[in-house]
Image (tube, rainbow, N blue to C red; front, top):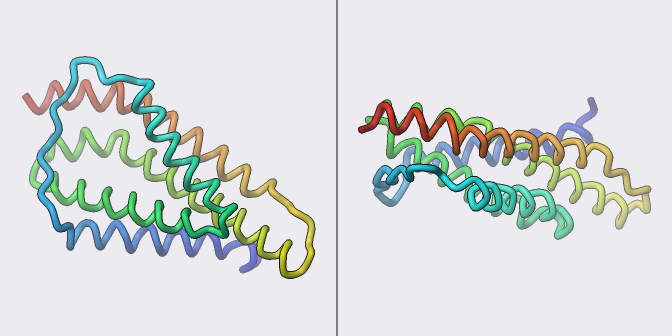
Length: 166
């Protein structure tokens, strides 16, 4: 894999990890653990998470600016949320069960968006053909991980939270 192919992954990882760390160490707000609904609503949670994935991927059409901004903001929030529940092992467990695949899906969508931006920039500057196979693979992976995270959030995380936290 050449640097031309690898840089969107490296840039996404750098932004994601940096924003999580900033959120973890410098979050400016207190977060109360949320109330657990009896049956978490699948559709609203799925739509919200898929909308984030959509913005991360399609942000590449605007040369990656929305991709970077949305990705950094979501990673910052994830760091802040995980920092807020550090002293609550039950909440940490409940959030981690679905949070890890959710963050992995957001990372993959961010890579997809940056790969789309790189392809468009190469098309504009060097008149190369548009090759979207790799960005679409990353986006497909993001969709799959996000849907797994939503299923886990509505089932396993809710069960664990109800059983352990009350």
